[in-house]
Image (cartoon, rainbow, N blue to C red; front, side, top):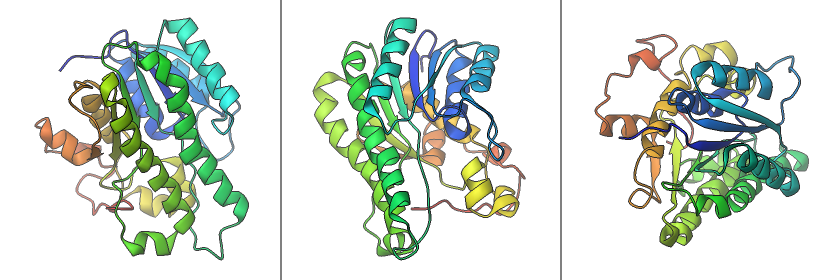
Length: 273
């Protein structure tokens, strides 16, 4: 396996959670990271801003460019990509991490929530990929990594939260389509999803709070799995729907206790698996 020294990552939603963890893992190699996210000012319920994340990335050994971006708007995405290219000379890796969540049935889902999830999850993934594509074509080992689940037509996932499932599966459809379309270009397009619940702000605020957090894993497991995928040969590794545990196992890592917030606890399996 190589490393990510000198590589440039464009990470959507990189100010906290899994996106930030992936950025920090790359920074330890000396990577450049464009943090494309909305959080410029501290949020009362959410830790971190694009600027505090940039400080952490720099402290870890990388270079950071924080850019305020709402990925619902393609002009902002395009401007952020151009700033990243101007600062670092190109883009080698796109991490489509930004995502909105609202878990409710049809009757309880306001249309503004439906629209938000589809604008951020599906449209944002498509827009960021489109904007980065001209630069990924020029990269030595270009990758697009999408944080989305393996697509399965199991009615239980649709019945419980139809709007959210549609938006996440829309991201997965982007993986299927782009992997095949970009194969002649040598761009690897893969998805990554956690086996268990990951301790993020969404879990803290929307999915059960502290009781769920205590039975979850740290974002580092996703970052380590992403690191393995992003260091693989993009011309040979594409079109896959990876699960974090399986990626680590393929690299010989089977002891995962240290990733748990409470080692030995009964971990909660994540959605869609």
